[in-house]
Image (tube, rainbow, N blue to C red):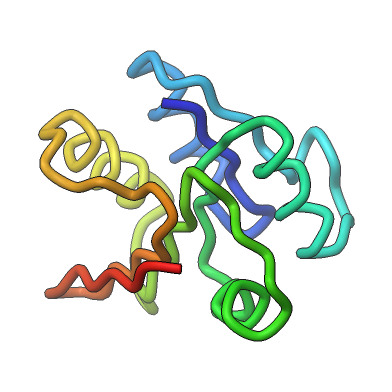
Length: 117
């Protein structure tokens, strides 16, 4: 699975996913300061799933027409330690029960919702 972590995704979690064998790029070190639309374009060009804490990605998909094939995962967590997203997603991906393709996946404290696009 190829991942693209947005700037607001904790670097500690990026390292956890990388150590687990995932192909992950981090906007914060590779392309710091680029626009969300540019993040979307990278994800589409390289067929990567976006990991973000930024709710604006839903608008980019449903109002601006961006359709990253491999999906967007938006974490709606307010309070967490830097390693928590990485550990959670590592376990979620390893379970292999959810298809993220062409979907906005919203993960909150107690639910996972998906909307196809």
